[in-house]
Structures are given as C-alpha cells and as structure tokens.
Length: 59
Image (cartoon, rainbow, N blue to C red; front, side, top):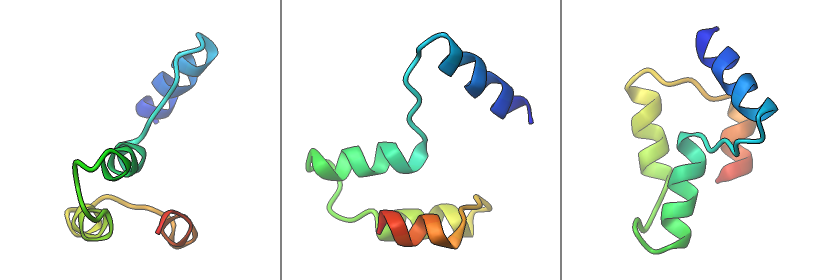
C-alpha cells in the first residue's frame, strides 16, 4: 500500500512513472536487451505478481 501512495503522490506532482515492465520494454526498444519475455517470467518466479491480461498485453 505504501508504494501505491508514493506513486499517487508522484503522479499528482506531474512526475512520470515507469514500472519495471516499462523499463524492460524501453531497454528492448533501445537494443539493450534482446527479449523481455524471459526477464518477465524470471521476475514472476522471484515473487513479482502481474495480471495475466497485463502480461499478454505487453508480450
């Protein structure tokens, strides 16, 4: 909950928010990483949670 509160405050101040998946997608776009799919599944294996519909959307 604390993370959501900080995110909301940042957005209210006009600060652009980029999450972990967003950073991975930007890295792929810039050629820093070749694939994001294995990285996303590694995050999930390590305990991060993302809705299945979100994963389908970004992949």
